[in-house]
Length: 324
Ligand code: FES
Ligand SMILES: [Fe+2]
Image 1: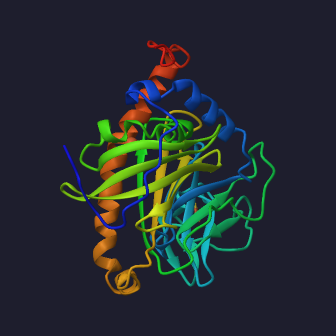
Image 2: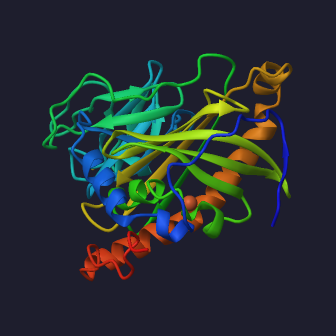
């Protein structure tokens, strides 16, 4: 379906690639770019969820097969093991009182101090997302996660979280394949062509459908700041400087992961600052619903990718994309 472009018109930019999308979408490039991302340090940090979804109501999280409880006290977010040090009750079934989580079985209150096996873990709240640091990983722990560059002007933020039967690398791999966009998500993407590609990063010119056939054209750079994250930054066109951060958090050591995606939109257009401030409550659910719609489909992709990997099909490419 054709698209009706509106907004800033971008100067023509040739693509270094040619041929149909299936031939441009080289699985070997994707595999190498993914491999490079998996060697990056991550400092032990994993995204839990949007910061404003961690409140004074205790909430359970599971990362790499371990259970945690997260809640907010007067100072910020507290995360500890979701097992009461007294007799093992689930602390996330309790409630918060005076900035402490209270065990539902016998009332033990736990907070920022150690108590037996209760040990609050390092947490980083970047204002949009809350991260947890697990020091059992092979990477050297860092004081903060490797945050990508975010917009500095007025920003409208939205965060969605979904879970799927895949590994974190399958979620990153999905985003390292921008070529599927037009084919797999025709409701959201009108046209897409690669305009730059390095060993690890890729820039695409994409017509993103805002409503029906109405689309804005932008140049978007994809890069991985750590092994569990891939970031899309608009480098030219409407909303330059806006980012979409996709973070994958392994729920189990294998076969189940959460995708947490933060959209941080900015624009120099008059009225955007007003919209970002006063209309965010209206716009945010729309942005989150659109991101979730894409991720329902992309999780199916990621799950399929994992299933193929388990069947030993990862290096078996049925069609040689380099052939004439
Ligand atoms: S199990 Fe938590 S106080 Fe007893
Ligand atoms: Fe996709």
